[in-house]
Amino acid sequence: FEGEIKLATRYAAESDELALLSNEWTFNGAGVTFSAITAEIARRQGDGTWKYVIDNPMASPPPSQ
Image 1 (tube, one colour):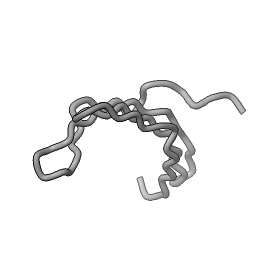
Image 2 (cartoon, rainbow, N blue to C red):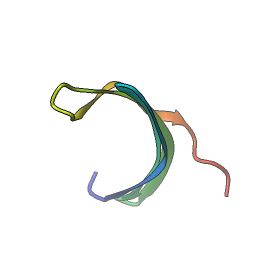
Image 3 (cartoon, rainbow, N blue to C red):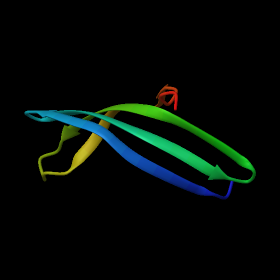
């Protein structure tokens, strides 16, 4: 698909070397629109960067509007 993805951070909760993250994303393009809310867990690396340990891009449907 060719299109555009918009991403909005819902929250990021950090504790020591772990972080719980959630985003709401929407894809628009090729005559379709779909979206979802994510859930991720990331771990801080020795160099200070973060890497996902768990990544669920379709954790739940977006809230009703």
